[in-house]
Amino acid sequence: MVNHDVSDNHPGPPPGTLLVARLHVDLCRLASAACRRRAARA
Image 1 (cartoon, helix red, strand yellow):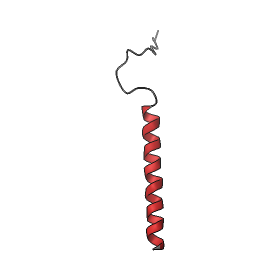
Image 2 (spheres, rainbow, N blue to C red):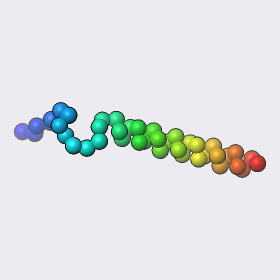
Image 3 (tube, helix red, strand yellow):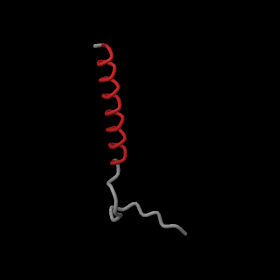
Image 4 (cartoon, rainbow, N blue to C red):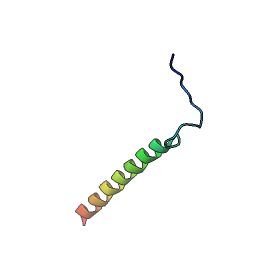
């Protein structure tokens, strides 16, 4: 039998950290694409 322990006693990043990291990467890519598009116009 496998014990699925979901308590706060586990080491590692808190829940939601991966989601925030993905959002940060997506925003950086979006900003980078916007900067490139602006540079191409000028």
